[in-house]
Image: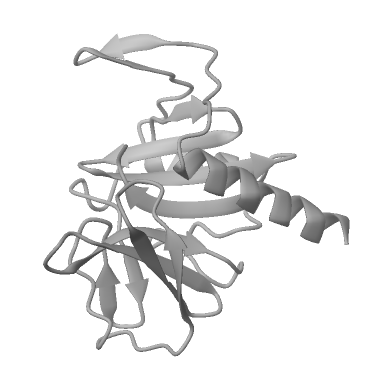
Length: 176
C-alpha cells in the first residue's frame, strides 16, 4: 500500500512539474547560454542521438511528432487543461502507458508518453522498478531537478524520478 501511495504522490509531483510548478536546483553551470543542473556524465552511448522515442507495438511514438490516433486506437481518451499549450490536451490511455497530445491548430502533436506500469520499457530497457543508476548507465549525462533526472536528446527529454534508488516514474516529453 505504501508503494502505491508513493507512486501516486510521484505522479502528482510529475504533473505539477509539467505545469510549471517551481523547480528546485542545487548545482548549476552554463552551457550554450542556458543555466542547467548537472549530476553525472557516465559516457554512455546513446542508440539514437536524435530524440527519445517509445515503441507502442510496431508504432514509433516521439514527442513532437504528429499523433496518429488511427494507428494506436483506444476507447480510453480524456481531455485535460493544457499545461504547456492553450486549450485542452487529449490523453490516450493504453493501460500500461499514456500518450498526451495537443492540437497545434491543424493536427494533434505528441507532447508526452508516461509509463504507468513496470511492464513498459524504453527501447534501451529502462522501466519503473529498475535501479535508478541504470538510467545514467544507459543515457549518460543528465540534469537534476529535485528528484528528477532529466536526459535530453534534440527537442525531447526523458524524465526519470527515483525514490530510494529505484525508478518510480518515467516520462518522455518535448523539451521545455
